[in-house]
Length: 291
Image (tube, rainbow, N blue to C red):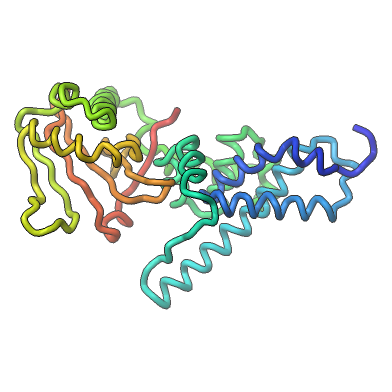
C-alpha cells in the first residue's frame, strides 16, 4: 500500500470485524464499542505509514485494549469480593435487543464459558480459534512467546470444550435427545415433548417457589405442560455440558441465569434438575460442543 497513515475510511471498513472480536473477548456490547473507540483513538495518534495489513494491525490494537479491560475488570471484581463477598452485576449501555442479537450470534453458552477463562487465555483462544490468527501474531499481545501462547489457547480450549472433545457416542445420543426436548419446548409442541420424555420423568428445582408450588414434578404430561409454560425461557437456552453431563444453559444476553442437568436413558429424558442458586452455579463446570 502507499505510504500514508490509515484513514477513518480504513477504520470503518474493518469496524464490524473489530466489534465482533471485542465482543467475543469482553462479552459486553457496550464494552466492545468502547474498545473499538479506544482503538480509533490509538489509530489517530499512531504513525501507520508502514502498516501493510490494516485489518491485522487494528485487530492487534483492539486485542490489547480488550486485554487491559479484562484485567481491570478482574481487579474490580476481586476488590468487590473482598468488600462485599459477591461479584457485582455488570450493566451495559447497549439495548437488551442489541445485546440479545449479538449474544445469540456468538452462542449464549459459549459466552458464559469464556467468562471463566483468565484474560490471556481468553485473548489467545478468541484470536486463534475464532479469528485464525497465528500464535506468532498473538504472542506479543499476551506477553508470551509463541510456544507459551499455544499452551494458553490449548488450556482454554480444554476448558471451553471439556469432555465434548472426546468422541463419546452415548454423549452424542444424549445431546440429540436433549436438543429435541429443547426444540419441542421452544415450540410448545406437546406431542414432541411427550415423545422425548420418559412416562415417569421427574423434574426438580432448587429455586425458591411461591407457597403451594411444588419443587418436584412427576409424569410426562405434567412435565410437558410445565415446559410449554416456560417456552420463553427455552428460547434463551442452549445445549452444553454441565460437569461433564448433558444439560441446558439458560443465559439471557449471555448472562448465566440457570442450568438444567439431564439424565437420559434409552433415548428418553428420565429426569432433570434446574439449578438457580448463585453459589451452586459458581461451582458447576460448563463447557460447549465444538461447532
